Length: 547
Image (cartoon, rainbow, N blue to C red; front, top):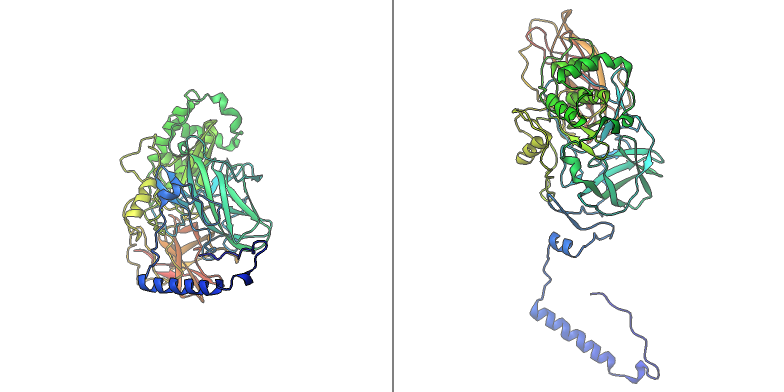
């Protein structure tokens, strides 16, 4: 009960002329206390009712956000904006994902690994489709980049329009003074309706030409950002519009001339040409690239990574998306490739709407915190057919919900963290030391009569950030002979992990060489670590550890 300030005495009368008032007040208080003691009237906790929040258009305690929103996936309740930032899971700061200048290098590791440590910041849950890094340009050497890196302000405000649906976002950010920090969004063309920052801090949100989102602050601080986002539902499941090529011509710049010959070979294999309608081209491409399959044997037949992947039809999500992107841009379909730590997919533009298209190859396992209060996102029906061996991102999400332990079985791939990621499974779901890594299959027993395998390691950066990939190159030999197709575990040792923690695995090719990346876990404690590589060997090679 809130006590009000006493009222001033009325004109012509004073408290002195009412001598019994204090006694009456004391008697009232005493009686009230006795009545409370006899009746034992207690307050009953009434949990929040999302349906009442909807009907009364209730806001959160700070007044910045709706307390609940109705979505096609069910009623979603707002995250508590008063909670402090989570220092163990930050975007930016000492765990920067990457800058606006980030690039992506394709790889030939087409095996079927696992994935873990997926952070899902959205309600309804969009796993594994958190939109984190998008690329819309292909350079001469097939490196992917963003064509227009200019950052444009993303306004905060507005309301849902017809066909839009709402999401909540909840993530912690390590702000860097006057530097953009990459943050996730739910999809292309999303709008920022409301935002709350705790502790209260002045920030601006912007996006680049590929619709990557960034947040900028003016002081070094860890903050928690809770947002309401609106986006067209058709983004997540609608067929490409029946537009003319002339409507798309100005949207796709000329592609590198060095790619023309390779593209012509792929276009013939897919069965597409400019004589077809753009929507028919997109449909044929989706069917072709969804038919890829993982492979333990990397394709190296033509010395052109695009041709090797596209014509062999080998690969998982990142390989399919990369080859689709190169093909689409060369024929004239505006396209982006999107990646996060668990999955990769493409987006195509028909001149009016960006369409998210999942090409499959989703991760085998997905370890993420399961929050029963967050409804899983239910997308519109997929307008394109799937092959019999379906391995979509939606399947992955359903497996993860049905088995939160992350021990699901099934096909798939792990993008494993972004630019240049080519590793097999990352194996640390926490900072606790571990000495083993799950692998697609146990290797043959190592040859015990040979001397230990020698693992050479190329130059490695000394400044490695959590949540980002680290690239490793070298070769493995045993008794002077090459060791093809052996597993290499990447191990970090430090004060927080004296026994060593396996952060990922790579494999050698037919020449005994390895070239790939693993992602440093976000939750790994800051500090100095010693990096080493080890292999269990094979039937032809002994086990060994790098020096």
